Length: 555
Image 1 (cartoon, rainbow, N blue to C red):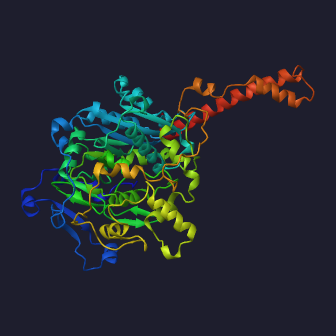
Image 2: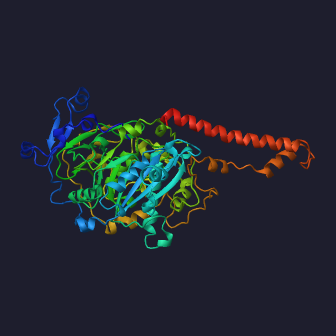
Image 3: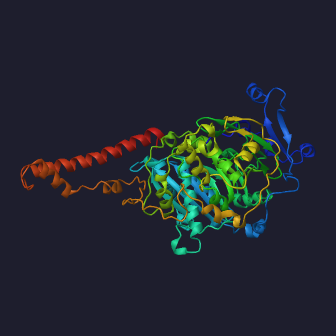
């Protein structure tokens, strides 16, 4: 989401990357967390008497002896951890770096066979740009000639980029895919890809990432250092230049600002953490490592059409109300290619003008889309109603009040473990007044709640999509008859997609010459004109694509 986490984190010194200095370890045995740097802006926000700078991290987050729920220890054992499946969720938009991300995932993992990757690959059809070659196709073409070895570890869903409705919408499809493969985990014939178990790990990342060697083992071990079954490891990850450097300074999300909705802002940092640090529910979409029951209980909302600002803040606070806790990782194991991705103008061309595209083989989206007609509010307004951002509930119309209640009680709404009022207090955010009210970048205490059996999955999956009566069959939705659009740069395939239809030409000729059966001097002439027009259209489109490719990438 951001251009970079923060300049101080992207310009680390050798001292920052080295082992903890002895004196620092004596003075700060569990590391430090930056509250805020002294600046005119921060003095205005917090006051001149605020304790600027760093604070020592307190590893004890238990509240009066009540500690996070931590009962699933099996894969704390490295031998078991090596086999625990990790489901990678990637939303890619015209990103030539997606293929490199696949390469990095499989080459850096200690056990690549347990890595299962789902990709929403949004590319422009009939384009010769390498950005539109396709994530898997380019992986096989550029990075791994023997890519078949991982063909059962990767699922690619192709979407025409012209139908994009934004990054949040793409990620919601990934949540839906996980849900389908969880609910059908006992029926192999019904699986869409690979079975998902509640205690598998799910990891949402961007499509332009790198990873430290053995990152898979490192992340599982880090998860267990949090000692919380409901931990979510998340932050704005550091730059790729820090990959495999064992960096001990990590970005820490704890501040927001408000635009059209809530947005992460003012990323802070932690130094030399000995375990993940509990944060104030601020979550980053570029890295989220958690048990898959978190993906099932708190799926990405599929009705946030065109949302950019609002995605992260809303999901972080939803995680909190469902009993999940966001932690800042204690090490840099996943990195981001900020320069390579954001310097490519093609990736910024989405305009969220896509249609509600549901292909006939997207079984995991049919029920979600079938209830869409019941809703009246989508996108940013939906986020703001959910969280009460800038909303005085006493001034809402009955229509908005009803819609707010539908949103909050749905499976994409608030949880029942903690209240929205608790979330506001814990995060330090006054949602109604759209402002940070308290600095929560320091030490926090865990907010207790009673755990539900089976991680509460059954109850959450029984909640309605859009206010419908639970158990009611959804209405039948129209099925698109065309297969999903697959990006290609093959001229022969492009021509096949624009076949000349002689029968259609005959109908045109009959219409042009009243009373004619089509057998006249006009028929062959029109036939030739239509053929030449089709050829010219194909050639012109290919030439334009080649020109664009040369201009943008000089290759």
